[in-house]
Image 1 (cartoon, one colour):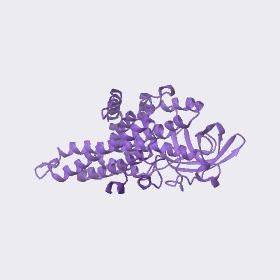
Image 2: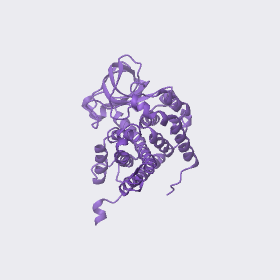
Image 3: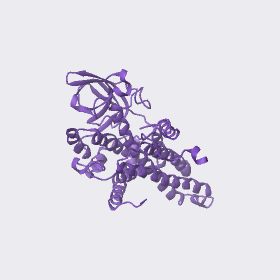
Image 4: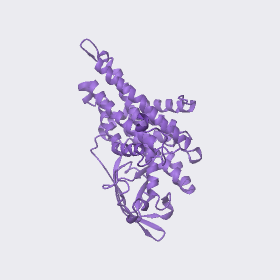
Amino acid sequence: MDFEFTPEQNAIRKHMREFAEREIAPKAQMNDRECKFDWDIAKKIFAEGFLGCPIPEQYGGLGQDYIAYGLMTEEVNRVCSSTRTLFSVQTSLVALTILRWGTEEQKQALLPKLCNGEFIGCYGLTEPEAGSDAANQQTRAVKDGSDYLLSGQKTWISCGTIASHALVFATVDPKLGHKGITCFIVDTKSKGFTAAAIKGKLGLRASDTASLFLDEVRVPEENILGGLGNGFKVAMSALDNGRYSVAAGAVGLVQGCIDACTEYSMVRKTFGKPIGEHQQVQAMIADMVADCEAGRLLYLRAGHLKNKGVRNTLETSLAKLFCGEAANKAGHNAVQIFGGYGYSDEYPVERYFRDAKVLNIYEGTREVQRMIIAQDALGIRYANGQPSGKPTALAAVV
């Protein structure tokens, strides 16, 4: 087992860290205060080609592997969770989904422009009545000649108001359950398509979030992604990629907390010495470091399986659950270490604290991840389609 990163992986990690510290970090706090999606930062990201990190060069990407992509995502989230959201949506949920499920014509038409930022994508799965119960899609797709007419509502859609294209999941026949769900590539300029920004969020304030409304939006049949009735499979495979980038980003948030707390703890003094010399502060920092190292290994294992082309739903769920919980714990402890200053946005830890919460919610709540993991362990439903081969708890005792 080789734990060393390749020269290419180290190079993209270093380049991303330098970019994030130079271009993203200085504006992160102000953009959060103003609830502002920063187009200047986005355009610089587009110019660097970061959004195409794991996309093959033949489709306009950088041709890097999932390890490099995870490291890059971690470095972005170390300074700004809102900016990482753009990567998770554009790359993980949209571009990689088209790469896997798209026709050659769809790939050629969309992927190069998604990689360079000419197109912005969003992922339209969640509905007011279909969050964790993703199969309960109420958006309808009605056949009309060689087209489909889509009607319904999506909510909590990241990049929803800035997207040029949306992957919209709709049912062609509610009686078929999840087998009736189909994924459509929708041009957001289409008649009947509108988006409304969602304001007043706890965290990710500098990211774009929206509700989407579709009123008989006409979509040509050739814009079906993955085939008629395969939308649920498309959606779940997309979430495997999305959860991977969320897990990597969560580790970045923990690392951000470590960086802030270790610096502050050796400057701030109480009782005549730096607070970093107090055992309770050391204990909180030690927990952050342990969780960061463990979380990084979990998401890198999932990335290794992705590189091999092996199904990794279980490993991705494990990473997403653990890393999300670690980020929430780190954010909480970071505010505690900073004390009263941690309660103010003079320092970034209050933003880390707020941004961490969504990691327990979107792209599969922590409860959904626990269900996936537990059902696999119990043999009720194998996350990767077959037993993992790991000994069960009972077998280990016997």
